[in-house]
Length: 110
Image (cartoon, rainbow, N blue to C red; front, side, top):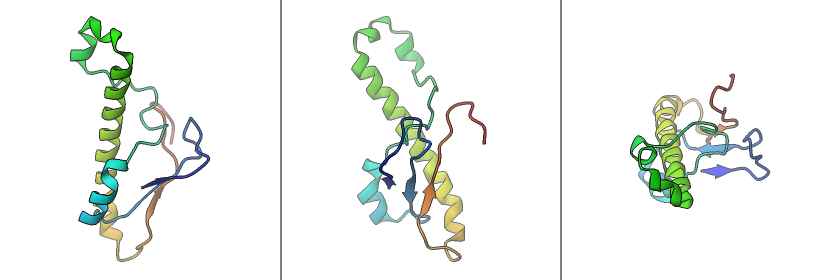
């Protein structure tokens, strides 16, 4: 998984490359390094209810940011795996890595 140099904060110029087939070797080598491009879930409120209901959580803004990023990354990985489930069916026609060129912000138009 790679994110192209020169990616913008909005993610308009970022690309993310991944194989159509999710091999065991790819998972071992890449899974922990997969990070969601900046535009993925931009503007989404990724605050679990148990954290929102616990007022003292505001004393730990770094931890809150870490939890939100973990949720965002987990959701991106799950979506990526769903895409791979479809793309692997076209592996015979195209063996090249797939490239996510653009992620849309919440409410973004296609």
